[in-house]
Image (cartoon, rainbow, N blue to C red; front, side):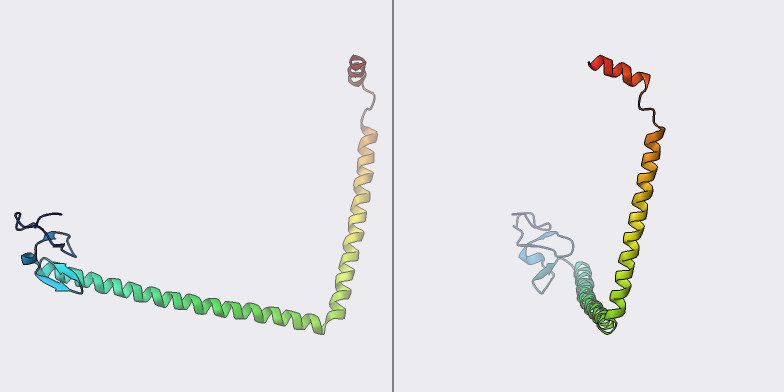
Length: 144
């Protein structure tokens, strides 16, 4: 254990809550809520810091409540939008299904058309390639 800063021959029993100086029982000037202080200045500083801390903790609690309320409101809105979408679909099911089927058919037709165009271009490219080049013949003769 350390010794008192003012009485070097006495063992310290605590430290100042504001500045951290080791104190013996005789040097404790103020004691409040289990905190010991070496002087009026440290007591004032310590209580001011405690009040600021309490304010921050209180504000943090209010912030947590606000976040919770915002989350509940957002959840309610998502559920309301999903319910409205379901009701719209339920009331207009035939129209929506027809439009969906039409879109699927159009997409399939476009995919077939694109596939045919790709095949046509691929065949055209194959025709333009020289399939019997001098290089190819020399490579094939080396393999044999």
